[in-house]
Length: 290
Image 1 (cartoon, one colour):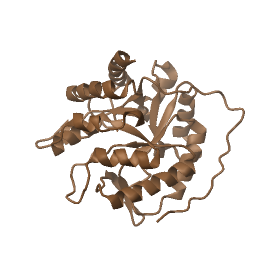
Image 2 (image 1 turned 30 degrees about the vertical axis):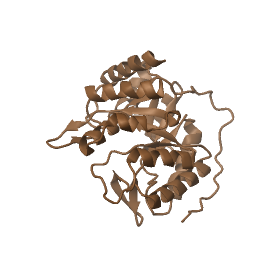
Image 3 (image 1 turned 90 degrees about the vertical axis):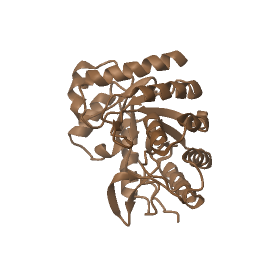
């Protein structure tokens, strides 16, 4: 069922200062712990990315710091709340706030996950995986098309990090994603850590995944660290990027080119210098294919 979204006019200040544009090279996920360091020291970072949902207020310190940093750096918006795989109606208030934020920050890209988080109006504190069937495909396609029409821009969809597979699935994740982007004309945020974690947990070849992703659709890459459990890998975003993920990243760049790449670190966040070292390492890989 298609949800009718209201048209939403967004006012933009014609006298707004010219902002840095064009995300490229290696970037870092912006977290509140590092606001003051960045504003004071203005480190040589190519770009930042923020969790959109944290900046939906009409004011307050988070938005103040974000706009302050935006004066010096390009910033992308990465959300967790679209719930693109849900059968609930699309959250109109969420999309209105996202559109206002995008007008304010002027990101290159707005992204979210191939997952769902809501059911019957109740929201879960996790990204729930999808069953890869034709019926689910039709539902997600409809919702992405509506979101893109409302935001008046294509969006990026991030590949998920599930810990289960469904016997009802009729296609692989990469087949589902490939068909999805062609049906919606959206693009991909390819999380290399997720690909590796899923490959180990589910027993497929990660290179097969990369070989079957449409190269021209990959517009951003994420790198992060996982935690080794007894029988599986857990995608925590709380560690440095592990060597096998760096190796898979290098393989990805040979296929997709020098795609802008973000270092994500969401738990046990270290000093900014540690994140900068990770970004510099990614930059070295990018320079090889530039």
